[in-house]
Length: 88
Image (cartoon, rainbow, N blue to C red):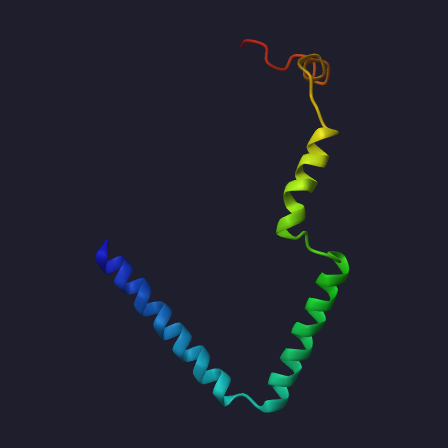
């Protein structure tokens, strides 16, 4: 087990080191292109998820949505497909 962890750690160190060496060898223009692509991805994600819920609003949003959603035992039984829960 310890050798597995040591091998994994060695692999991660070598992987990061080689990634760093490759990054050093790349041209500035390719780094600029990568930054443009990443900025575009962030812009697209912001458009699809316009405003994150803050920590203060998280509790109130949860309570408000939970208040309008209630399942009664009768509703749960009525929504069950025919034959569900029957003994085999």
